[in-house]
Image 1: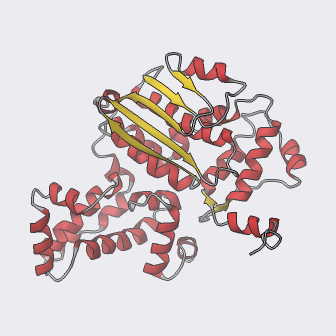
Image 2 (image 1 turned 180 degrees about the vertical axis):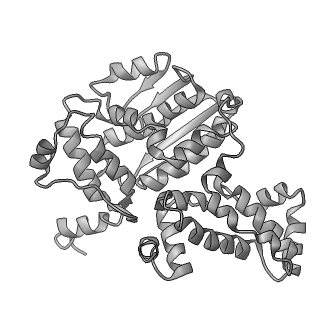
Image 3 (image 1 turned 90 degrees about the vertical axis):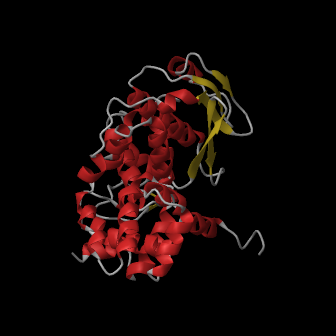
Length: 349
């Protein structure tokens, strides 16, 4: 393929597959007022009026979201637009996921929730959380780098920071070092105000932050052991344990259902929750003619339909609760299970 054949239209079509949550897109439109940007200004700049996405839409094209973001970035009179939007995107704005985030036993559990949730709503940015000795290190990456403005990465980083502050009910996190791949911003003074005791480094090879690990394991005063069952009550209607013809499989399925929202579910975690070895778990499932993989898939398939009936859950909420960290993987699985998209099925009700 020549460079001539790979023109702007094909590039636009290629990147249109990188979808972003309609929740995020609608939030950006809602933020225009607090940011002091009028509908008239945004319409004149974009050449069109950005409209809220209604209903149960799967995704909004990343091109459409970036176009809105860049318009906001241009019209906002200060350089700290990423941080300002991060301040506006509170846990309350994340709905059910935000409630869960605030009420886990420790911040380490919430960090895993945030990792999966943000990767679901902003598929082009991801982070890895690694523990090294007494420290925790967060690595942030953007893809495709050429399309994602540095203010978006900045917003992503500070959403994590501000949510953690609220979780810990403190004014400052013990961030030892923070490294950013972009150049020193004009509003670097705000970084120093928010993180006064942090060593800052710009124009680095990667985005990362180093924190004291101990803060992630402090007991949470806001912990609520029943929040999951209260929030997705409909999912608990699946009473696998009553299927007496396969009692052990039913017990395993019930354990999967009870732990699925925490993420990282696998054979070992479920065996541990049942206080048996992975070998015993596999052997007993084999006796009943099934495997952990088949059972896990079956649970997710049945839960997806129950969750779809809950009008309080959007598509990212459902993907999150079913243990997905990438929207595209959930979307493909849902179509394989039910032959149609989530929005199509919900609109038929």
